[in-house]
Length: 255
Image (cartoon, rainbow, N blue to C red; front, side, top):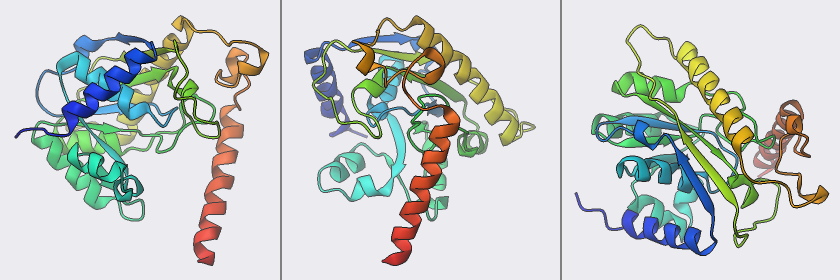
């Protein structure tokens, strides 16, 4: 079936990245399956991660990734038509079963489905706890998991920081790991642990090999605490997430 929206969106993104002279490095592109369903699993440190994770799959095997995203994005007057046109999958967080079934169906039809198992952006820029949905849908669809790690994207636009979408010359690392094949005997919890362990090693490598440095003492916010940066620790970040979630729940209850 012809794709009328995805190709021009990809072309526009690549043009913008070139104009900003983003120094994009893709490692492991050969791991992207050339055909068949796969669950692309990425860490989440920026609002733009779907673009870069999708670029990894596209550069690796010309694969177009159908990302699972909260349904608010699909209701927006600008992003909504684009998301639907690119066949991304809306997720209602009060009832995720329809989205799960749509994702499994897409996988069985040979699509690459993109998932952020942390669910929300990590304020610490380290891996949060993973939900098991990616492993479960991979098992149900008999598709491999494709681990992807991003680094540097947080400098462009992340939670709690102003957009810097015109910032130039930023290095961005896209690291793609070897596919993880599942067997019927694999338990989703154990597969998720294995996946998170593999991605933790990849993230550590991406951070160690990253060519960028803070511009000065006031620019260490994007570095994690264990690397001497000003980002909150994982524990502090989790506490902030819990406080934010509680505040949102209270606002909803008052409506």
